[in-house]
Image 1 (cartoon, rainbow, N blue to C red):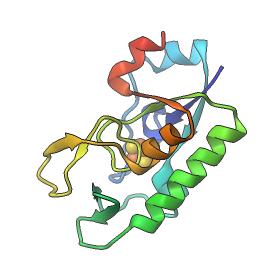
Image 2 (image 1 turned 180 degrees about the vertical axis):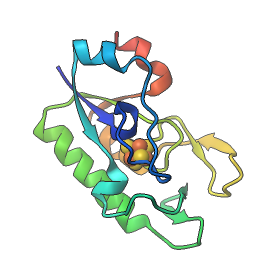
Image 3 (image 1 turned 90 degrees about the vertical axis):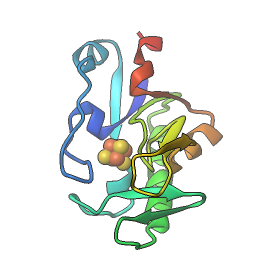
Image 4 (image 1 turned 45 degrees about the horizontal axis):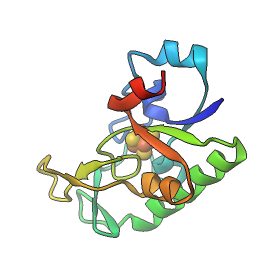
Length: 142
Ligand code: SF4
């Protein structure tokens, strides 16, 4: 079974700070599933490293005050294209991200406050019938 995964959870150094967040359980998951990595922020044309950004309602604004909504929308659309191409019905996504976050995201103040909500990519995948799991929920997949 093909499952979409946030690239940083697979070990790709695609985060805003050019680091990764490899899941400790990744080797076990690789034995069971074909994991298809995407980084929506890179797919949207943003560089790595990049200025961190947070979602504010239907916009995404970076810490320098620049509106990067278009890049986040494009990245979400590209990630959805890849999910469809590989027939991924499930996705494992990095929690709290303005792209991949599912359930809770930062509130746009850059003060580490969490609010209920999803990142742009998580929202678009959900709207298109892809079941999403944050990295703390992968036990549900095993
Ligand atoms: Fe990871 Fe998603 Fe952020 Fe890319 S956009 S670094 S895959 S959380």
